[in-house]
Image (cartoon, rainbow, N blue to C red; front, side, top):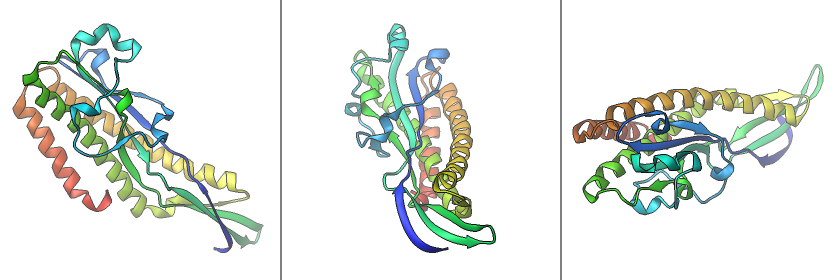
Length: 228
């Protein structure tokens, strides 16, 4: 490519998953996806070890209020693009004339937790706090694993993040379609894992089973350190 380059801001892509820890797994306790612009702000927690103080929502979402006695915690997490992602543009001559070409620059993904939308039961017994907190940590870790897998894909399939078209809008649409497809594929697999984890640990109190999931998630994160 040759010509003058122009950098514009890339959009934030959000896969918003709401996770509720409960003693069984009815509809209201299953992982679900919503779209929220809240993760566009800086008021999120990038992946790290969680504390009870990170759950700052004063109450459950309205549609879950009637189940408050059945829920131990409610965690709002997402995979988002890191701030600083941009589209870098230039011009390229072709037989058909001058084309606008672009590629995604500094594209990175991360897991994020939204404290203001995450709730902790004030009636949870003290001897259950460690178990429930570890449960939410595994959910957060599974999201970070998925984010690092996306980072790896973005590096290995960087050619898919480049496009040429008649105008910048068409370029952005093509690249965005690729990223949206990656996110959709990741979301499908991630929701499956969250569901399997909840099926194994939310319906019964099992320190051994949950520890196995925690150890597995930590190992996956370690294996993907290069892509964090």
